[in-house]
Image (cartoon, rainbow, N blue to C red; front, side, top):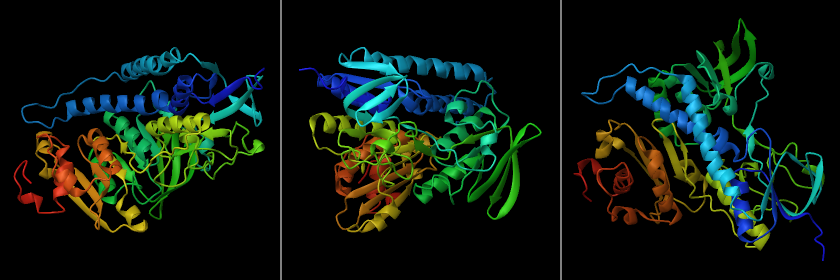
Amino acid sequence: MENKYDYPFIIIGGGAAGFAAAIKADSLKIKTLMISGGKVPLGGTCINVGCMPSKRLLTVAEAYWNAKHSKFAGVPDSVPSLDFKKVVESKDALISKLQSKAYAGTLKFLVYVTLKEGSARFIDEHTIEVNGEKITGEKFLISTGSSTFIPPIPGLDGVDYLTNIEALSLKELPKSVIILGGGPLGLEFAQIYNRFGTKVMVLQSAERIADREEPELSNFLQKKLEEEGITIHTSVKTKSVGRHDGLIEIQADIQDKEITIKAEKILVATGVRANTQSLNLESIGVGIGKKGGIITNEFLQSDLPHIFAAGDVVDQAGDEVNLKLETVAGREGFVAASNLLENKGIKVDFHAVPHAIFTDPPLVSVGLTDEAIVKQSGLTCSCRTLSLGLVPKAHILEASDGLIKMAIDAKTEEVVGIHMAGAKADEIISMASFIIKNKMKLDDIIKNTFIFPTIAESIKWVAQSFRKDVSKLSCCTE
């Protein structure tokens, strides 16, 4: 009997979520169409204009900065030369290689998946239009990601502002830049450009930078960034943006004082908004949330039973779920495809998903914050914050001023949150996520033997601090 639809499964979006779903569909031998289009090439935000290129620039900036500011006796400061154009060209070459291998290369192994470049728009519940062609599908996954949210500031749309896309591709260093937003993206770009020699100012509307993180850690990170020369203002209300004498000019209220700020460039890093505007979803009955994302149930199903969504395009239901991370998108893509194609009925476990701000030092977190525990009924909060000055490896690295915070349920001693700002924190937070996921208790950590000397030992040290004064312990003792 002739198939009623052109494809049993259509994936709209070629990022991490879309590829996870495509790989799952291919394993089930289901004829699948993947549509990739929009501002970002195949592979989505992370590989092209997000995690990978920004971390490359952060790494190069760190090497350049450390050469000029040696931490170690006997290694004098140097005055290295900087060819910023070559730095960007090297970044582009790396991303091209990785994109080709991890995405375009992966498609070669997917026998049942066909790629079509273009932007899709729903005509009805089972029909989309791509490049003027109408295509029908039985089931759909929408994984179109997100883009920078541009706040409605008077005059902003009249200046040549930067988003992460443009900021990663500048061929010349600006002399000065104002960054709107003190979250992960804004802070990472602030350090990148400051370390390369640009004068940087961050304007944050909240009372502190990284305001979803533990206050001790965000305050510590602000101090470190300011010590490097970055100017940071909090509790800022940006009133207008314009251009005057070749510079971008901002009128802002900073702690109830109106000031004028000028810079060569302005970078908008005020969060993201789901890419749903061109899909025509509401006309077919797919609900859209306040932030523009697709409203789904816990199985990632939309209001229409044959249409699921995964990744950044999903409406965020709370601070602890749907984090805008490639790892989350990949997991959601697999879960959504499993539920849609096999009716598995599985959910994404968000409570143990780690996240990081990849500054130097990095700020990382997994599990519940102190504030979240207080709000969550049934938990009795107990927390300890420990200086990395007690961890021997931190002194080896000349990075003893970091912090690690552990939160437990005082009744059961289950570890429910681990948060850290300090050297190598981004490399050990995945270990912490296993602790949270497996509902480990203090004694599970204390009785485990860690390798010495490492920053990872800080997890054991902070666990021990619930039992005794760790400042009186020698190395490797319990």
